[in-house]
Length: 54
Image 1 (cartoon, rainbow, N blue to C red):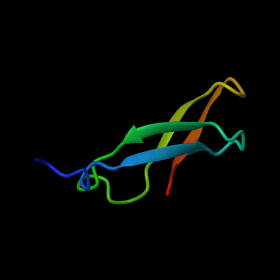
Image 2: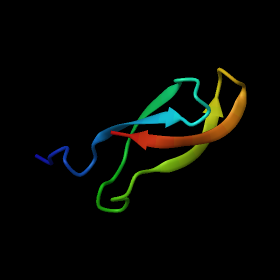
Image 3: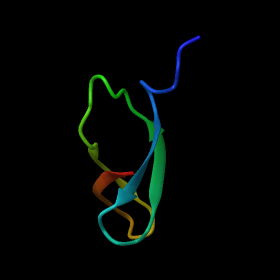
Image 4: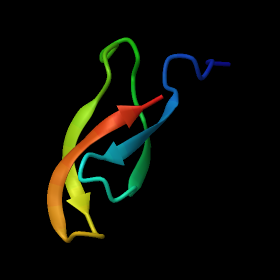
């Protein structure tokens, strides 16, 4: 069976300071660095940058 080391579960925390998070998986081979995505924050009702939290 494949191990979960290649695709770990990560938390994406909003940079707006609202404390809102998304939970997703990432491929560690393709993206070894921390992920940064622009996603919707429903607390402030805007798209903001979300960063990977460890």
